[in-house]
Length: 280
Image (cartoon, rainbow, N blue to C red; front, side):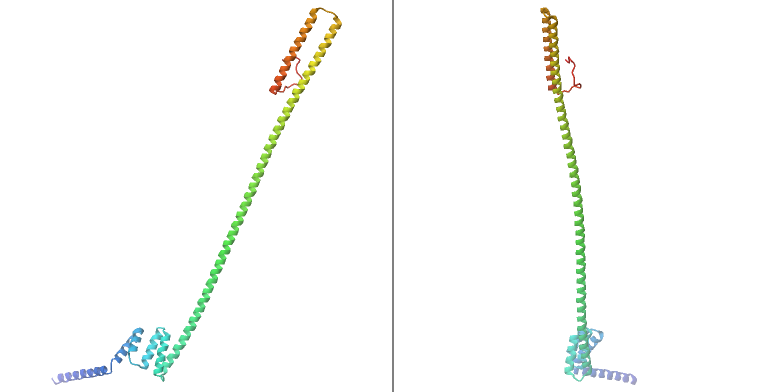
């Protein structure tokens, strides 16, 4: 029984101590509670909430160091530098704040140099890419020009071949036309020669007929004179016979004359240059 009372008294005493501590914490203000929350967020890596809660807490060296470190971890180096700077102004003897300030300042410088170097590298790369693009463009343009040049040359060669072929065809046509003209001229000359020969033959035939007729008349006249010389005065019957014969000869001449005219109209040429005595 006594033991139970003792245990109960101890528990009551512990609860009293806890209550007193809690009251002391409440009396010390809410700042420490916010700071603890900030510490908890910082340790978890929740730097955004940590900075917000640190700014609500009372000023201390750790406050400015942790705010600066939070910004530094988030690569917000300018804000980190500003937090260390404010802390140095408030606590100028603190070495950690100065050290972090110098480290951050150096980091900013390195980042600027890095950014500048990256910018230069980017500009260099952009220039190289642009030069490469221009080179590719020039090569493509040169290739297109060469292709166009080859195409123009091929077209020119085709045109020359076509022109030569056209000239050759024209020459062949001219030769054929010349041959045709020569043939026509030859036929025309041959026809003219044939007509001329036909006319000459007709003229020769007429002259031969005329000579034949003159020769026959002369022979008849000679015969008549001979008969007159031999017989002297014969009877009237012989004279009538002679007249009949002359009339017959005249009829023959008329028939030959008609036949000659008929030959001229028909443009026929005889095979023999001489005619029979009585070709009718």
